[in-house]
Structure formats: C-alpha cells, structure tokens
Image (cartoon, rainbow, N blue to C red; front, side):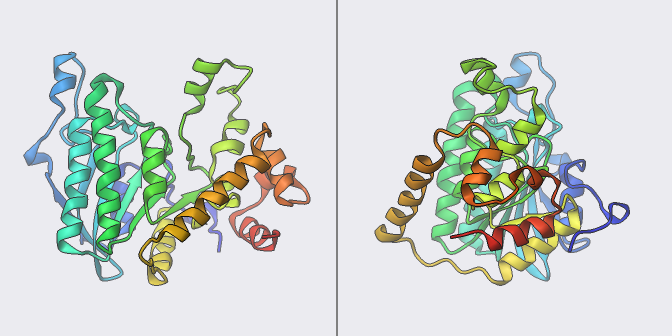
Length: 300
C-alpha cells in the first residue's frame, strides 16, 4: 500500500548508510572495513582528486527479519557512485564471502553511473570481476538482490550488474539502463536523445517503465521502509532452479521479441501503448498500487 508523504523516509534522498540503517534490522549492521580501516583510492590521490575513506561503497553484515545477510551500498554522493579499483574490490570480496558463508541473501544497493573514468582499465576490470562474483554467488545458492532507487540510478556496467542479479527491486525514482542519457546525447546527438528532457529520461529508463517491461521483480514507493518490506516479501517467496540451456534460450527469445516489437519506438509512451496500456499518457500519474494493478491486467 502506498504511504503518505508525511510518513516516508525517501530512499532517493538518503545516504548509503541511512539506507542500510532503515533497511536491515535495527542495530544489526556491522561494517567491514569501517572508517578506522580507511581504504581511499590511490589512483585519485595521484590525480590530486579528493578521495573517500570507504571509496564510495559501504559493505558489511546485518540481519533482515532475523536472517543473516551481506550488504553493499554504493554512495551516489561520492563521484556519482562510480566504480574504481578499491570500490570494486570491496564488492567482489563481499560476494566471495557470500559463497563461503551462505547468507540468506546479498543485498546490493546500487546507486552508480558506472565506471569511474579516472581509473579507466582498473574500473572496467572491477566491473567484470563484480559480474563474475554475482554469478558465482547465485551459483552457490545465494540470491543477490539489486535495490535501485538512488539519484544516480544503475547505469553503465552497474546496469549490467543489476540485471545479472537474482532480481531487481526498483522505485519510480530509480533508473536502469546501459548507457546514461548524457552519454547517448554526447555520442549520438540531442536529436537521438535529449538528456535535458527529464520526463523523457524517466519514461525510457525510470522505474515505472522498467517494471512494465518486466525488467524488475517489484516496484516500491520511494521510501526506505517500502524497500525493506519489498525485499522481505521477495526473499520469503524466492526460489531459483539451476539454469539450463532451454531456459536461457527462452529468455533470449523474449529479448529478441522485445527488440522486434519495440526497436523502432522512440518514447516510453509508444512502448506502453504497444504493451496494451489503454491510456499510456496516464502512466506517469499513476501511484504504485495503480501501476501494479495495471500491469497485472495487461495481456501476456
């Protein structure tokens, strides 16, 4: 059920540590590599750029509804949550720990524009290592859940990582895509994609669009408690059979069919109409509950 604005604690506006504090059981979080074990990026120092003691990602152990979880939360306020060598190594180390410890889940609070260009190849290698580590954790039977609702969204390599996770929980304010709007505009021109048209950006990459397209398991309100409840509901019903070739090919066909059906469309409004939404222009105005009901009523 949607919450009144007075009772919400915005996920979008919160810091990484505030999101963790509201997401997990009170007092249960124990940080790995806390401030006393500072790990700033050596690459940024060489470029005379300010660093951060945690290099923009908080990792640790906690409990969710009494169950042990490992958690990684990117800080979008530091360099847009971009992934560098230390940042990526912390996430990979946490995921490898998950393989050994078998927690109930790994919760990945993604808030990132992608790779930190200041670190170039080191950042790209870090993304590839995170991808492998996510799949290794899932193969070991540990669900990896991506929570997306921060100001930086999940773009670039982190957009790929999000879709490699067991599932994505997203808010309307969250965004999920490969290339960010500014990147597309820079490479292909404003005629291809106007990054300043914020309504267009959210119609193409935002949480409502991704939910209607089936890219996310759940759409939640922009509220820390809503993310907590959505995470617990998902994990309570979670099961993941071992992947097989037939299932992978079926998923690939879904993507091929999507491209065939929507590849020429230019706006989320056109895609929603093609999905069978009777009044696509009303989608941005719908609250979460109404949008969930709309999706459930769409042709499959």
